[in-house]
Structure formats: structure tokens, C-alpha cells
Figure 1 (spheres, helix red, strand yellow):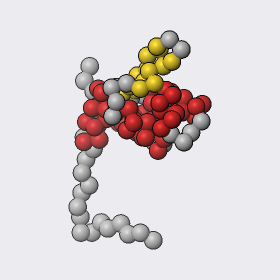
Figure 2 (cartoon, helix red, strand yellow; figure 1 turned 90 degrees about the horizontal axis):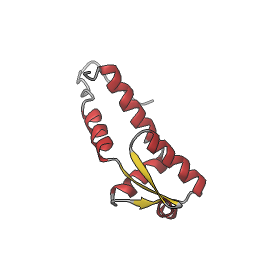
Figure 3 (cartoon, helix red, strand yellow; figure 1 turned 180 degrees about the vertical axis):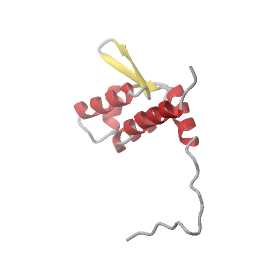
Length: 108
């Protein structure tokens, strides 16, 4: 089934919402520099409590941006490359602004 404009919009909104917090952006940046990572490493990287980091990881995992594998008592998180590639594709597909000499937005 071909992807429709509505489903692409929804997909972009889900991914953008998952990245809508600076801590989650930082987690993505941290994981992108590694092939895998233990949750404790992420907690050490961010000035946040373990429970807060876990909640951010859940949001990113639910959106499909990261995956997590259980390794004994720990969970190993890593980037989901296809999801990041899709996010870049969806952002690139956004239309460019139309230039018009009659339409000017000004700050207050």
C-alpha cells in the first residue's frame, strides 16, 4: 500500500514529538556515536535521575527511534538506523517556503 500524505504527516509528527525534549535529542546524539549502549552509560551522560532517563528511553523506543535488547539484568539501547533515515526523508519532503514580496512576517 503506498504511503499517503496523511500517513507521512502522522509519521513525521510521531517522530518529531519523540524528539520534542532536549534530553531525548541528547540521548539520540549520544547513542548515534556508539554501536550500542547500556542504560547506565546514558544515565551517567545526562544530569537526570535513572527513572527520568528510563521514561525518555521509553518514548524514543515507542516511536521506533531506538531499540533495546535485554542483556541479563541490563537493557542495551541503540539507534534504529532505518528510523533516523526515515525521519530525514520526511523532513526533506517538507515544502520549501514560498517567497513573496507581499507576505512578510515581522516580530512584535
